[in-house]
Image (cartoon, rainbow, N blue to C red):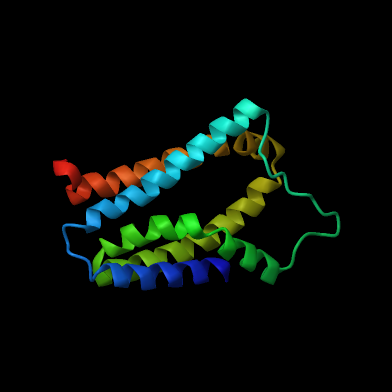
Length: 155
């Protein structure tokens, strides 16, 4: 539910971005690039300081319900929207529909895979150790891909 709301906002914003001149669209890649650089900076800062600033308290009552998870997913989805808008805006209407379907199917796959991997301690430890490095790299790569494929800066 939370991801569907994120996707709806991103699609609406991407349709709005289609009113921009075509020469401006590749520069939307600066948004995921900036988000990736920010995430890399935060990961470096956390590593230097000895851990993340905002450790969340863990509950022992079985965890949050579906609506709570959806709300948190949407609330934390600003970076997703920032990445999806440039991708969807440069894809056109048909591409947008394909992306939306693929995103929704893959979210279901990720949910099942996440549950599977979360029960595997070795995998969970590896993701906990390296996930903060992978996220910035992926965001930076997406931003650079949008910039290069769109011909920004004469690339």
